[in-house]
Length: 214
Image (cartoon, rainbow, N blue to C red; front, top):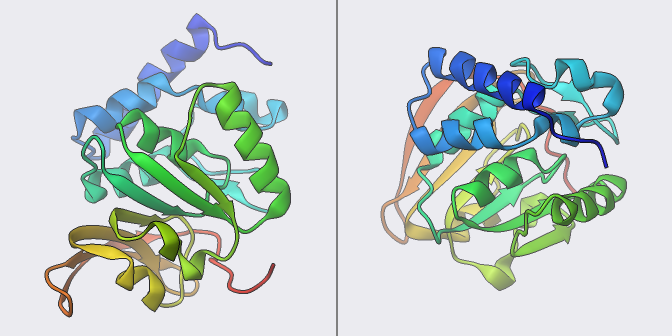
């Protein structure tokens, strides 16, 4: 296992400053960025870049999201300690770790088997214990564990999957990047059984959320 050194910790403090400078205000989110050893989530050949505010390739043609994007989505989600959070797209597990740091009960789905196996092993190795990690189709969500207080989608979706809306608690929040080439970060708040309020934020770029590819 690679080490987490004082140098790494110093770089994380710098990264948190950069993210804060871009407008992130939630102290708990910034603290998570200061704490989580992002370099361990990446191939060692990219280690020098781990604390830059950029996305980087990981296994299975996926990427580890830009720290600002992770922080932005997490801040919009407004996670409270003990919240049941459904994450679509476990990926490297970095966003999962951020949610765990905030005290969420995390249920996460990954559709790339290689990535799922690797991340599941890795997260427990560095001490992050999500409630449930699933290998499967994110479009379907996890109906057996629903309803969720929060849902976060970490891949670009051409549309908002209906099953995910139905798995959100009344009073719950879902953050999802919607669109084909570039995505508009979208917040959906469930006001009642039938009513959702939508807020759109700026453009972001994500790897696509793929359906039924398993």
